[in-house]
Length: 457
Image 1 (cartoon, rainbow, N blue to C red):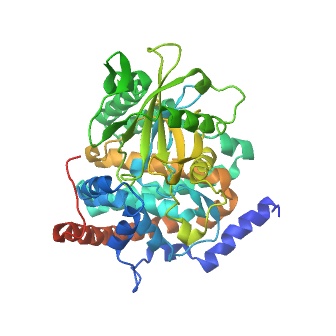
Image 2 (cartoon, rainbow, N blue to C red):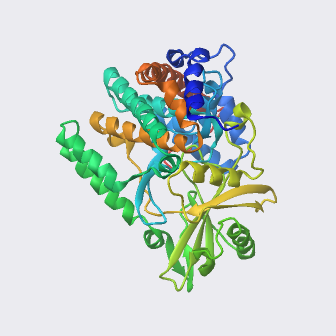
Image 3 (spheres, rainbow, N blue to C red):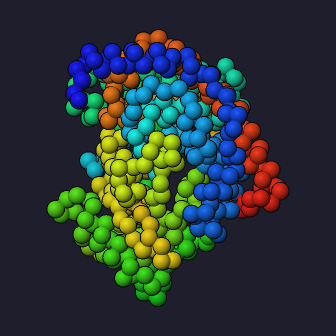
């Protein structure tokens, strides 16, 4: 049923009765809360056994590293929280390290969400809470004062609210086209410097990071990862993080042919590239142990490389709480979610279902390995930079939610005041406390031998 703009606004306001905005700040662990370590053990059952200790080793580095790998744990906790019953396409894992810059097909450097492994329709509040709490967790690790952490979180949520309200005033197409590119980021940063809210050092570092992102391309990966072995181009091993896979050329050609049918164009650049070699690659923190491959391909000659990443797509951690995906292929689920949420998506996004090397059938999505990709180094943040970055992430998340979700209803629910902002600051403190308790339980599980962790990788 098509609702009028007035009906959509009324829908948002009426949702405040069932889920008061202040209620989002009142979070306590459920009395029957599941064992968080059991969730990690459950996930390990479907992952590459020899890589699971690397995942645990990376999560053991700090409470923030643990938080990055604890999307399933938090999804279970969010399932019992207040919600306005307004759904959007969720990222599903919208912590601050899952935002960054990348190159669009038009060769613009954009800032957006860059991880969609858990994407699924669901309550918009869940993404905002995951982002807000990540700022509180990271702020503690960086030694920020409680008042500074609160200000960073509320600024992030206020920016989300402000951007959603702005989107509600836009035409439909303007809301879908809205995006942030590198030039807009620099304009924003220079305005903050002029206003005295950010230092020149932070502005210079941001400009340098943007320049570095433009250097992260296929040629750079080629120089770093490829060697000549007996006259053949081969991905150089770096075990256990990069392990070449030999004698699978026929399987890879079948995979590429199947993938080609999902990229959605009559003629696509991938048709001009020839498969050369593949390797298993360990990626991220939460994703470690899922199967991921890098594929080396060449175009007109050996100086024209293309690197694709084929990454296993398992069921979203949200699925047991919001229902199964309408897509029977989880690779397709990821690609569709990414295309909906991002202002512009990778030209090479596609998906496949294949019989893997062990005989099991699995879903994968494919994308470029590096295409002007860049992210922040959280450990280098100072308070002003964290504040600005949190605001940037909040606005970006709102843009993504506004494309598929009912932006008028969400904006109406949030309103002009800061009730929701303050509530999420309270939520973030409470959840960061819980994350620290979970991290301590995790560390004890490793110490006792219940879990095996391999650090330094």
